[in-house]
Image (cartoon, rainbow, N blue to C red):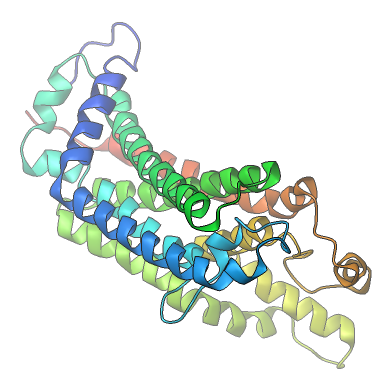
Length: 319
């Protein structure tokens, strides 16, 4: 049952966003995840500070090392976020639609002046904004701890690189949020949707790199042992591996948070000149390296949400 098509199809959008965000921010599972992320962030940053205090005054990008330096047994902050952001995103959306069906509230919601367009888009935006709040809080926590423990302020370029990294984390999470929303539309049981989302995440995390390495020699075989053939095979493996959001996220963090990185693939001779002189890439050049990666993250998020939208529009809603 749907309301009459009078007025904008986005009528009720912000009502859905507000209600869903309130549910997310007050739910027990989100509070548990937030505490987990905060505690692990504190641990990784404190360990990083112990490692980088020795280079204060010698490194122009000291604050960026808060994100990348690790001390055993704790991982680096970027590695931690690569693991936890998908979990938070999936937790926000795996029962967004099928939960309404199971509670038998979907027909009641759509009987109000709220359209399907607004309902689905509102649920996605609520999850996206909630994820943004969590990530911004963690980012501010890391920068604040850096000020306290290091005793020096960040440079302007360090802040810009950190903000762009924050945006990349958000769209990296957006992919898993849209995927969980898609499975929430496809499967009526929340547990099935959660397991399917986790299975896809584990596949790209653990297995896709190995599959890319197996497929590359098939697509680009080395017939005559020429250097060009080996280079083409390496580039094919790299291109295939970049179908994984995890690889895109990893390369974005590498280029943004380590300015000395001059290429995200085979390093050619002319690219070594600046590295030998010890000069880091300016921010504009680092952005040129990761622009295709950022575009891929945004495009994947839009594609998955569009597929969810199409499937949801075709579902039958019984009163």
